[in-house]
Image 1 (tube, rainbow, N blue to C red):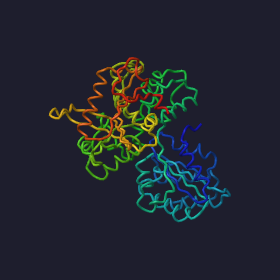
Image 2: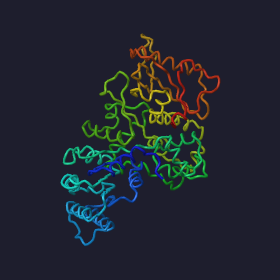
Image 3: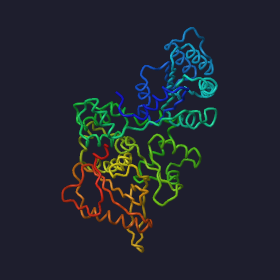
Image 4: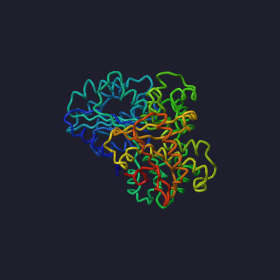
Length: 472
């Protein structure tokens, strides 16, 4: 059962119903459900589908491609010596078909492009010189090596430049979609448990597929991550190796960001990773952002060149906190509930979930139709000007002359807003108004899972957003 993905399904169906040939590229983080989306959306309407062979040489890839051609009905052909000949055979399969719409799905495309092969040239020739001139072909390509998909297909500077009919960046599930997913599997979890699970796994459907009904959330987390031979024990290594052909520089970047709550500038990342200051470094940052591992933002009032990069991927944050040096306790998560180590991580992880659901926060504020920009802000202590020094992780800067200052606090019960907390928020507002010089009204917003406890001191707070709002 396909959960969510309404926009993506509509795009694929429109491409199928089109009266001209279409070329679609799908990319996104590993395990996010790219292949599942295509297969569930188009069902049995494929004329041909083929998946690249991981780690194979060119001869291996061609052998597997021929096997797929035979599976889909092509007979009595000589084994191709290169990809140009292989795509000629694909043309023969298409010519022989009586189907009104010829759907061709090439999965794990990057694995087919082995070193020294002519794969991209052959793909260009197939589409530019033949398929695009017809009216009946829908070519869909996707791959796990997102860096390859972006550089060789989506941002191709050669023969495939500007040839895509559309591109689909498949994003992780939202909280609401995760809720729909577990309900479809008859797993009983309340929203707070779904939220905590999201803080660990993010919205990656593959990770959620390991949840077993009948187990509590801590039992599931122990079984999936901390037990002997846990199913996701080695996921970190597989994840980055599958996404990037040379993963070491990318891992250095996310490792450095994993140690900085507020993020780092490009210059700070260069110093921390000791990677060369080049276009390749910029490309790696862009690819990590495209995969959803980090977010790029700027501080209020600062130019784009001073952008900050912040690690956003929930699983990667969880890995660096708890799995990089995996504990030997198979019941680690059960035994750490409400302990300082988990409580500290929970606050940071909850902030990341909020940053992934800014559109839901806007909806709760009633400003879905208002043009807004999400950014952060910080200032150093300046006693001479009455500035105490503040860090604000999320500002929603609105075109209606209001800035929402968002304070995100995780708790497992209703949050008690004390006079001290309210005073701290007031001090942040004062610092921000004094140092930024903004003329906008500043509305402080409190984002807390269960809402404010009775009797809480909420003098400065203009709006309380709860977990239920994030599920919208």
